Amino acid sequence: MAKATKSIASHPRSGREMKIETAIYEPFKAAILQSLKGSKGKSFTELTDDVVKIIRKRMPEFSKSVPWYTISIRLDLETKGIVETFTEKGKKLNRLKPGFSK
Image 1 (cartoon, rainbow, N blue to C red):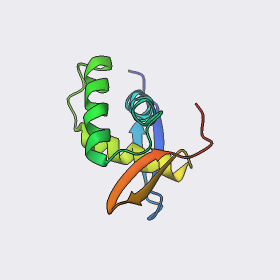
Image 2 (cartoon, rainbow, N blue to C red):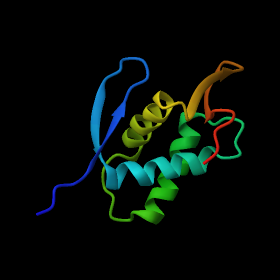
Image 3 (cartoon, rainbow, N blue to C red):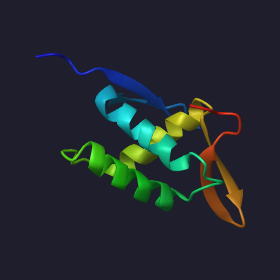
Image 4 (cartoon, rainbow, N blue to C red):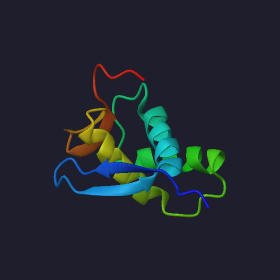
């Protein structure tokens, strides 16, 4: 049996690393980027709602926690300088970093 390829996801503040199967990491990364593309900022709930819809279409067999993977991979994208979190009118929002293009 082939061993699943893993991607390393790290937390931007704690630096903690975790291994996520690449077969899960890549579709989630694409879904997060798709959701945030052209957006001025989305709350975590809005982002997760989008990702749930996208993942259900692309990976109907996926039965693990979509919000958990969304936050873990979003944090990794923040570590990599692709996504940023900012506060506007007291709300924490997520967006693609200015200048980032796919």
